[in-house]
Length: 268
Image 1 (spheres, rainbow, N blue to C red):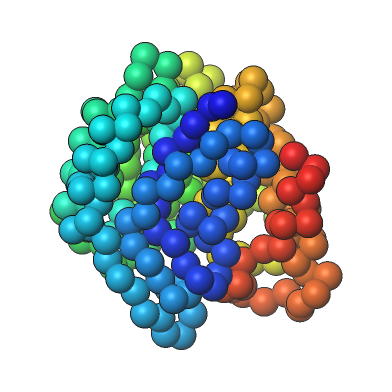
Image 2 (cartoon, rainbow, N blue to C red):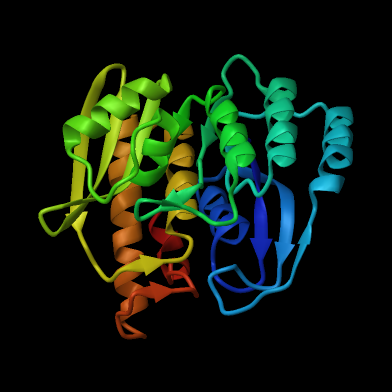
């Protein structure tokens, strides 16, 4: 059975990070091997939360994994709260990357033209170092600008997105959440070319859709899909999950509970 190491935090409420990624990976018949980076009572988009930072425990967990000598087909990384954790994850990739291991980094740093307030220059630098080891990255447009050193703003043209993707030096850059003429699009840049996958814009912001997306794309790719098809299928899956969610609640700017993707797992 194929294996993906999933390095991210876990929340009791607000379907995101490990809670969102693990069932998607399992639905593809791939073993998900979580390395928790932190535990949250509920994700940070709620009014309040409690959390335990596992940075100090991660290396001892990794050392135990080394004794097991696993072979990973993929590694998927998510939110990195501090530079030290980024360094630990970077060494993890060095230790466990095999000849055919696909490294996917979701460089979670900001949105809507702004860096998240929980990040500082050291954390951004750590994410950039991690991206250098990636085969695939899944930034939104703000994160792509941060990675490429371009000025932050609201809205980028397809040509600007292609240029920024080239600057990252990563083989495959999948830029999410691009707003074009009232639609939402994802851009797939690979081997010097770029394609746009357009979809309907439904609602506003939903917790965890990025985690679902990156887990779906990597799992589909490891299962034999080409990258363009993997992104297209992941986009459609999330679109359907949002539709399912809005059957039970009214549209609003932000949905901290996440999307109701569980009923759609059987369609993977």
